[in-house]
Length: 71
Image (cartoon, rainbow, N blue to C red):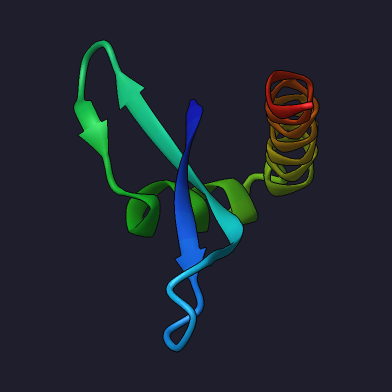
């Protein structure tokens, strides 16, 4: 699993106001798996909390890296 980031743009000012972290999964055997498929499975088998923690950790690490790059 990995994250991709999508910018959130203010419609009037056209300025970036934030980012959305989008979870993706590329399986060696299945190829690209849709979140619509893997999220319900993760919810049913109790993996949604660890996945959520992964998303938060990765997002914060990316934010730290981004801030260091632009400061």
